[in-house]
Image 1 (cartoon, rainbow, N blue to C red):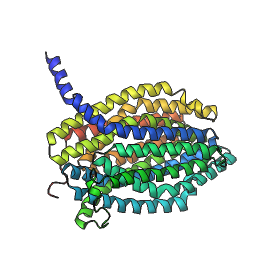
Image 2: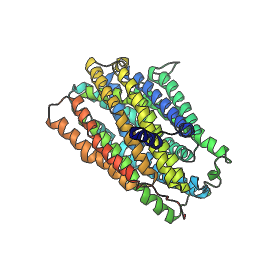
Image 3: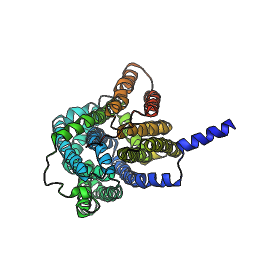
Image 4: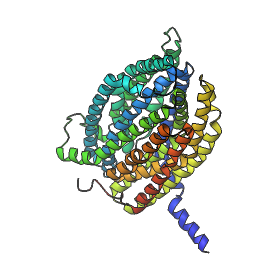
Length: 470
């Protein structure tokens, strides 16, 4: 009898009804499809470069690792204000949404300018940080040159990328996830087609290799911006915040202060977390160029399999944020419990499929046997920790939905730099452990983060309305 009662309590707390899952999937699936197609085309892009040679693939992979830090920096910038966007939308305060949009534009413009200067003038030494391991001088120099070719062209796409992120994030926070999905799908198709044409020199075009891959990506960024911005302004009845959106770019100081104080910890978190991930990769790279190539292969397939928990995490921020804005705190907690459980259950199933794929995927690349074997084991470790990462991602977005950005900073970025980075640095440089063992031990360290995340979510300190009273 007691066991039956406990089961009933468990199901009520963590399992939703059909209407609940329909609501969650209506938000999550378009994000999932967009991210899935984007990452799948990135996978094909990666394979196309990988079939040219190891040096080309590694050079592009290193640059993408650096751009990953920039991408996360922008994500943090728009997400900080996005906490308010979701809650303003929940209150039907369209002027509030306009103010967050303008604030986002200013933030991404400043951050993109800083990033472009850093990458333009310090790109060579940054790439060289990943070329400290074993490898012939010729291979190292070739990798550096290919990386610089790729970087210079990719910089041209930053303006389009930053503005499209502002539009897409605002639409999602207002519950419109289909349009960003369509724009993303179109963009990645453009990217894929022009990858094929420009990398291999088809239909009369010259063979451009990694430069062709970069050019195709830049083109796709501008296509995505045209689609998402064009739709937003053509459908003013669906997006009332665009009325008078650019009549001024001024944001009242009281709101700037409010957005800034809440958003800067999130911005710093995303930036420093991305920098932490880049530093972890650099730690692994001291074991040789094959490790760089193998990590690139493994991360590419991992990104495809991770779209589920990433989309569900973003859905937590949107759904729970809107409920908090409406003032129903009990419903917010109940919804959050069910969404976290759903994310973990889904990703456990996905992880099993990823384990099956692990031995097969590296065979698609034109690289040496050692890099392929390393990639297989990296993929297997990533699959085993996927349920853990699904919980951590959902916990992070839960804390963020209530504006607890200082806590998310400690939880996310603080943990990486205080736990993960020291483990990787010490084990990679001062022990003879195989790089796979070093990687696995770093991932195992996140179990401590899971315990911390569980405690923070359970305490409910994230449950608050940020926009009541203006």
